[in-house]
Length: 178
Image: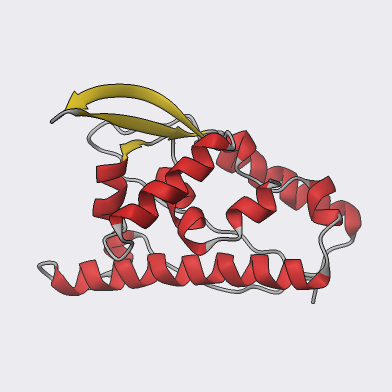
């Protein structure tokens, strides 16, 4: 199954997103992060992702007569490459983008819900949460340089791990021609 086919399912995309940032989680941990997903459904989709090589087992332990596995995202396998994207139909692109936006909205809703329940309520500045759309005038070379710069800036921070001070942040990017 191609990466796009795997990732176009909303539950599988949410599982992948939960593991972003070099996280290792059990299915129990995943269920705690995705409580609206029935356990059997979650196990089925984790199994599909693991069988396809998007998730790898990094630990196992016995828990009450069964084996609990800890998973890690295989980041390179969990993305749609340029060749695969070039072969997608317009409808597949629409579906992929819609799934991406739905997952982004779900993450936003979780932030809003958590903030509304937290002492002090929602505080975008405190949480470092923001969204904006900016129009840029760029030729092809300038656009390529922008993408390279962003990859460098983000890439420099991809190896950061949790250390008690850091918190996990999700960065979503969308480039649309104007």
